[in-house]
Length: 135
Image (cartoon, rainbow, N blue to C red; front, side, top):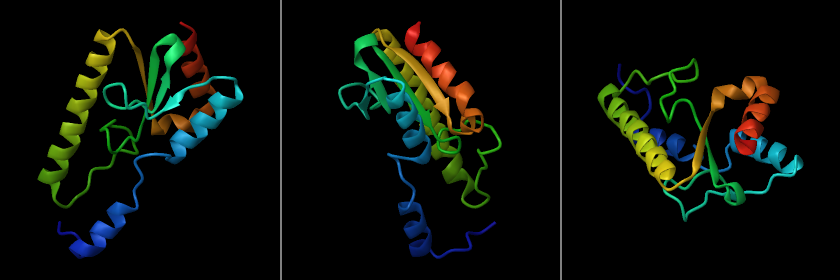
């Protein structure tokens, strides 16, 4: 299937997609902050620039969009145009995620990945993050 948009239109749409301060990030950060947790955002001193870095307990949380990181849930709908491009791009993202997690664990950091689809049960998600931070 061909793309229905011209390249300039597709580029303009793709430019609107944020990589930081997404709805998932804002909601999780606000909730954790209100519970008294303090963290660094997009901490550049660690591999992969974790979305949330809890320095005192040496733990990081990645807040991943299901599509961009290939979660495989209902939110991970692959495009029907340029399938080889998207398949390669999303596979590279997944491989990079695996390598970053391995590196962080080797450096002694605990790693938790939170998926966009987990927002559906937000209370459960917060309990999961709190358990991770307290362990």
